[in-house]
Each structure stands twice: as structure tokens, then as C-alpha cells.
Image (tube, rainbow, N blue to C red):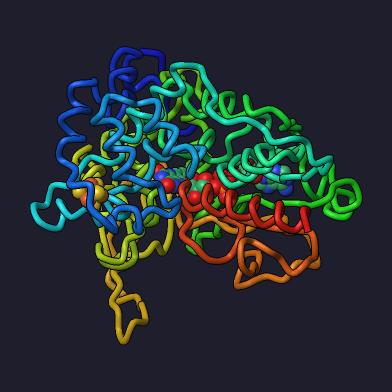
Amino acid sequence: MAQGQMAPGIVSGRLSSDELTSNFTDLHPPLAPHEAAVAADRCYFCYDAPCVTACPTDIDIPLFIRQIQAGQPQAAGQTILEQNILGGMCARVCPTETLCEEACVRETAEGKPVEIGRLQRYATDDVMASGAHPFERATSTGKTVAVVGAGPAGLACAHRLAMLGHDVVIHEGKPKPGGLNEYGIAAYKSTNDFAQAEVDWLLKIGGIAIETDSVLGETISLEGLQQNYDAVFLSIGLAGVNALRADGVDKDGVRPAVDFISDVRQASDLADLPVGRNVVVIGGGMTAVDAAVKSKLLGAEHVTIAYRRGRDAMGASRYEQDLAASHGVRILCNVQPVAIHGNGAAAEIELEYTASHDGRLTGTGETVRVPADQVFKAIGQALDGAPEGLTLDGNKIAVTGAGRTSMTGVWAGGDCAAGGEDLTVTAVAEGRDAAMDIHAALSA
Ligand SMILES: Cc1cc2nc3c(=O)[nH]c(=O)nc-3n(C[C@H](O)[C@H](O)[C@H](O)COP(=O)(O)OP(=O)(O)OC[C@H]3O[C@@H](n4cnc5c(N)ncnc54)[C@H](O)[C@@H]3O)c2cc1C
Ligand code: SF4
């Protein structure tokens, strides 16, 4: 066993390459054609379908399911992609259990929804496998738009603008496009480098150039973009990480969960990735669950999610919580970190029990110590590097309508903009809708 030591207890090679390959396979394997036909047959093709209302991108779900039922997966894929150009990724990562599938009448009646997400994947995979790009560009408008950030919001905005005949340059700070699709989404949800394959497929529309390592606030400025382009769309996500307030947070072995998750996504060999024997993840959202499950899959022995409120308040859906539990992750609720102990490197975390009085969270004074050679902070991301002069709403960029910021000619969408849930599908919807609004403004 290759044991690449990093800090005491945090080592690589806890599992063999074969075990790791088997651990990181697709969470929901694709449906075979006969399985898709059976799943599609369960749809009632509801009039005023509640599943459509629950989808942030308003995909005509009964229509695409009927197209699958009729043996036309390409047509089904087109129905999906017209509304959601990242329909392939969303089919893999959407928390369908709190969106379309929660609203499905068969969930309400029988507790077993139509498998909308897996059917969406079946149809969109079919389109991508064909290599075809079912959209064409309109005649050139001669206008150019700068998009900052190549995550789901930026890509969706760029594609729609390109389709409408505008030229788009995406300025992306990282070496690869995709945003959290590439650097954040759990590896077992997006396998086989799907994020880059989807970007390559999306770019087939033409008219979109991506400049990587182009950082707003460093190599480019908003003022410069305003001068050189007819409009600007900001989709910079939430690049900062909220600070954890506890003694000892600077000890070795304590780091942001998003960095660990990004390392897992970018690892060329998972066997080289160090992980603790005793891992504690602070937080209660999807990021906390992802970091915890990944630690387990990499071979950590004991993994605990420590969350300061009760289970019902967790950002992670019940499905995600059960996913964590099914991988042997312990979820400890109503505790908050007080201190991380250890001689230079983390060895134990001290957690204080909490109680809620009139909605206010307080520590009870009673504490518990949990062994922890690795501690991941998953207490939320924050806006980082928003250009000066833009009005903020809380700690996000304030927008009205379809992403209009306080500056004329500058739009924003996705996680960096106020309103809407921080989900891939919401970012796609906001990027698409801002593109339509930019198009209307440039055509006026
Ligand atoms: C660990 C994790 C797991 C998640 N899992 C899920 C999931 O399973 N399902 C789900 O629906 N949602 C999930 N989410 C949320 C989802 O990933 C986001 O809501 C979505 O990616 C937001 O898209 P975006 O385009 O707004 O931002 P991002 O995806 O963050 O993209 C922003 C882009 O802007 C770039 N950028 C930032 N600053 C600059 C700058 N100054 N100059 C140039 N470029 C810049 C970044 O490099 C990045 O490429 C998860 C989030 C995290 C953190
Ligand atoms: S709510 Fe369920 S049954 Fe009705 S159209 Fe949507 S997927 Fe089909």
C-alpha cells in the first residue's frame, strides 16, 4: 500500500486502485432502453403538470417523457435542451427529490415518483452520444458580450446569446471551464469527465470564445469590459469560504471542504489523495455531505458530519442525508465546534451541544470530544471579488428582473446574484433568462 504521508493520520493509498474505481462509479447508472421505456410508461402526462412548475428551467417534462415513450430520445433531448442547455449535468446533479420528483403526482399518491432525472439523462445522453448539436446560430448581430465565469450560469448565458447571433467571450479565472460542474460537483455524480465533454458539446454552437486564466479584478477590470463589449454578464459564483470561528482552526489538517472536493475532482489517481482516518465535516449542506461521503469512499474509517441545528434544518435534503448514512457517515446534530485540539496538527475536535430558544441558537456548555485528524469546513461559500460600485443585496450582487444589476449594461446571475437557490439548475435558468434580457436590450 502506497502511504504518502502528509500530516499524522492523513495519508494516501488507504484503498487499492480497484477499490477506489469501484467506489467512485456512477451514483445513478444510466437507464437501458427497456428500463427507460418502463419508467416512461409510469408517467400520467398530467395537464398543468406540477413537475414542470417545480423545475426552475420549466422543462416540458410530460412532453419529453412522451417522446421517450414513442421511441424518440433525440426529440426528447431537444425538448430538454431548448430550456436547459446543461440538461445533461442537471440530470445527474439536480436534487430531483426536492424539485420535479417531489412534485410528481405519483410521489404524492404512491411515494414513488416517475424517475424524471434518470429519464432526462437517458434523452440528453442520447443527443450527446450522437455528436449532433441541435441548435443553430441566428444571423450575426455584430454585438459582442463579455461573460465573466464559465460555470453553469455563464455557459447557459453564453450559449443562448450565441444562438441569438451575438459573439461571446467568456473570461474564466481557472485553467478549465465548467465552474463547480468541473471543480465542485461530487465525483460519483459526474463521472468520465462529463463536465468537459458537456462544455465541448455546448461550444459547438459557435460564436463563443473562452479565455481561461482571465481573472476579473486582476487581469481584467469591469471598466475595461464595459468599454470593449456591448454588455457584460457576471457569473462569478461564490469563490470565498466563510470563516470558522473556533480555537485551533489554523492547525494542520483543517481546510475548506470545497478545496478537498476540488482535489478529488482533479486527481489523476485517487490512490494518491491523502485522507484522514478520523474525519469530521462541519456543516449541514450538500458540500458537507459530498466531503463526508468522498472521505469514506477514499477509505477514511470514521467520518462524522457535525451540524449545529437539527436534521430538519440541514441544507442537504433527506435523500442526501440518507446517502451519507448509507455510506457509514455519522450525522451529529445540535453541536457546534469550540476548539480543535492537537499538537500542531488536528487530533480531536471539541463540540458543544446547542439548544434553540425562540429561534436563537445557544451553546449549552456541555461538550463532547471526537477524534479528528482531518477537519473540513463546509459552512458556506461567500462572494469574493465583486467589482466595486455594484449594489449588493446582503452579501450577493443585487439584481432586478432577469439579472439587471445597478450598473447599466451589466447583468449578473447564478450563485453570485441575490435570489434563487444555489443550485446548478437555478444558475442555468438565470443565465438563460439574463441572455434573453441582454438580447432584448441590445436589439432595442
Ligand atoms: C461542493 C459543492 C457541491 C455541489 N453539489 C451540487 C449538486 O449536487 N447539485 C446542485 O444542483 N448544485 C450543487 N452545488 C451548487 C452548484 O454547484 C452551484 O449552485 C452552481 O455551480 C452555480 O453556478 P454559477 O455559474 O453561478 O457558479 P460557479 O459554478 O461557481 O462558476 C463560477 C465561475 O466563475 C469563475 N470565477 C470566479 N471569480 C472569477 C473572477 N474574478 N474572474 C474570472 N472568473 C471567475 C470561477 O472560476 C467559476 O468557473 C454544489 C456546490 C458545491 C460547492
Ligand atoms: S407530475 Fe409525474 S406523472 Fe405527472 S407529468 Fe410530471 S412526471 Fe408525469
